[in-house]
Image (tube, rainbow, N blue to C red; front, top):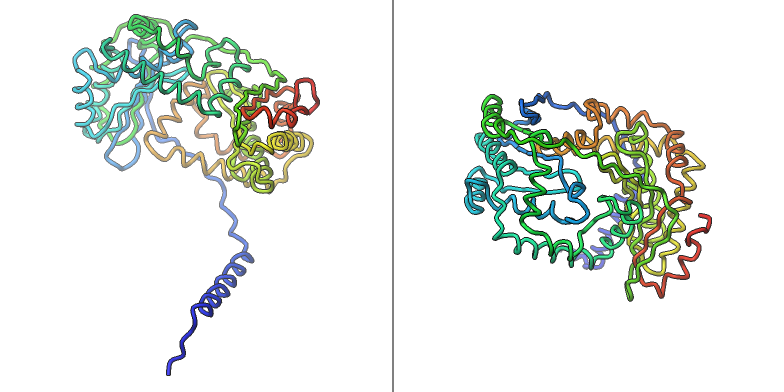
Length: 466
């Protein structure tokens, strides 16, 4: 006769079994990771057309697809203070047709190749991109050439796109993270274009089609344009398409505008009231060495150890140990000839002051005491592996090449990055922290409920020692 086991007994047995498995697993030491592998940059060719346009071709991968980017060194940094927002509107208008194609015809052409046209603008670049089936690589080059060199820029679409931008501004300025970033950038950069996170509604409303065409005329020319092609493609056919599509683009114009900011570290506490907010948004940081500096990679390692990775010290402190926040993150934010370090966090309102105290304490601790070799090695392995992953697709590889060109990092940057990360020493990390991350020079921006955080922030007022 079979003996029936009760549900309670069965659950107890299963719990005991899994507990034993868990205990056994905890006793095991995970295998030590292998040595970090250097990233091998695929063989590629870079050349110039007679009109000054630059071309980089990267045969890469086995998937029968190819990504084509046409990057123009022009963005919001080139708008001029009276035309803020024109760079983004120009990028949107460039998707609305070329001299020969209407908006719908342009979209149909991209779809025929298995893609959707993307045109985006940042502080220093406007990038048009298609990711297509390999057989359409030459067609994609020609189409993007028309988009960048011969855009239609229809006035009939301007009001619609301006309204879209106004909705984006309204949404952005309702988010505490955006408000905090706007305040932080304004304090760091003053009247420089890098201070503008979002244009004002008034600026967008006054933009005319003449402003758009004037911006394009002043900034879009072959000398400021670079075509990147990566994936599986017929190299001779693509070269011919480049020559046919853009070789005759003989428009003259200036090279990159040298508008480099000179941000000064400022010991400022800036608070924006958000009545009733259950959280405070914090940004604390200051300018550091630019990306082309010899200190840039040691600073990246320092940031990853301090606050820029899930296993970082600040994350372990205010997330894991104290539960003040869910997802803090540190970053080195870079643009042309400019970088800053910042720690960002959305913290529970009642822990606003305590969170800042712990962030500053972790910075001061790392400045006075180097990390252990074991802790540093874990961060170096993380950065090395992440770097390899960031180069594992066509688009990602092009983005890295663009980053190297945009920031002036040099040809050897990609192939030496992993080795340079792994030569950083504990003493280097301590030195970078002490040299650059000085709390007494940091800007602190807080967006939260003033009625509940003002007293908490008193120790961080300008003039108080951190």
